[in-house]
Length: 115
Image (cartoon, rainbow, N blue to C red; front, side, top):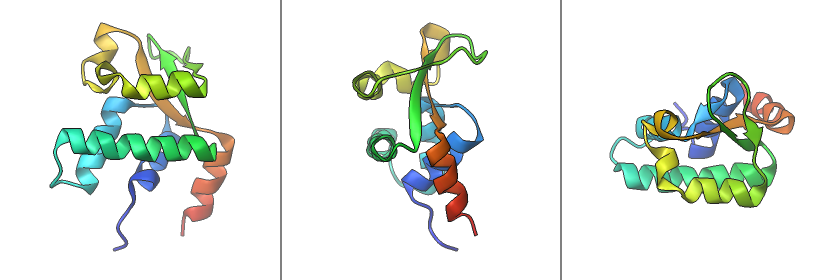
């Protein structure tokens, strides 16, 4: 079995649906079970920033999970990734949530990678 990278795992989630930052850490835990949550989050941030730079994902802010999410500009997205509150499991109950979704370019790259 070929090991999956953090960027591949995140793109897989983002192609499927809007994905909360808290869900990304859970996905990282499956790939890197020996790492602690802080290291998993740091790994996720690096991968998310790479995917943003490639134009494969967008970062969105929402508040009620009804498709009302608003795409954040790059500076806002990087700030949202730095806010620890956005990574907590309870984040959507306490304030706006931050989620990822694949762009058209990201979907084309993802499906181009599939065997």
